[in-house]
Image (cartoon, rainbow, N blue to C red; front, side, top):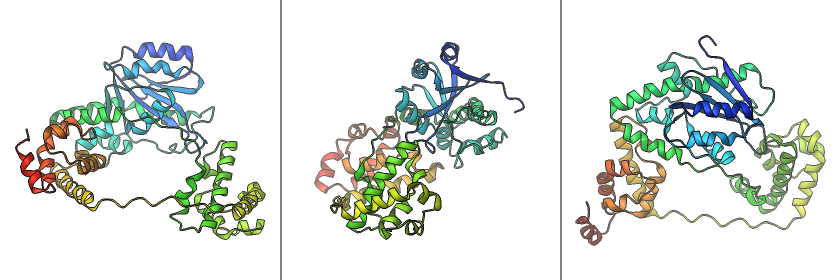
Length: 391
């Protein structure tokens, strides 16, 4: 860790209060988070990394910290908040703490607006700064305590170089005259909805049953198995897939074994599964065999072919526009915005501005081109009647 500052580990509320006061005077802070989605029934933020241009901090939300002390800092528009690939971090931070984030700069988004195709943090740092990131701790259980020092240094590296990366892409956005476009994307990212802690839905088994074309009796067995798996996951505080993978559940529902030996012959089952859950699984299978046959949910209505045709035309326009600019297609306009445009068929620039997923900058930059594409799908009388209304 040559050239790296000492890492400050914040695990008391007093230390966090002091840090929050110190950071209030910083014009820029870089942030990242680590969560435990691979290791817990309900994931939570387990580390929050913060770097300034001169210091690095790792906050331990699992200690006695009032993490909401960071709220005023994140909401303060005078402090620039730098993330890389912020969406998941923001979803988790908003879900766990209700934060509002203003003045966001996302180095991954900036790289995409500048035309970069390989946008991983390690790749960009290697190309721009020559720094090689150690990614060996990507799948660590961040909910464990104490964390080894090498894991903490890994976490430190994820924010330590973000101010430097920020400066590089801020300069590139200026050179390419793409700041306004990037700012709109940053603001859209900052407004991402918080994650929702959804409750277990016992009818969610159809998500597994239908793609695997299970019979209604097999689906009834699967339902009991899915309910059992969730109960075990909740008790053991593990993600459901750590109890039994979907493939094993489908195999059990299809084979409906009646013995422990039969359980072990199912693909995806091992001796450990049979030892821990064997009798309970057999009981779940028996319940499914005697349960009332479930009724599949109604199929989704097929998409309107005219709507799909409009969407396809807009997508083709977007592809050509992206190739001309040297960026990925969704940098031009998101898929959701294309569907909204295809569905609502705006006829004027004023109507374009009501497409919230489009954004004001894109509406101004690409509005005439979008309207020209949609004009091809308007009935002649309507097209003639709206043509004079454009502004």
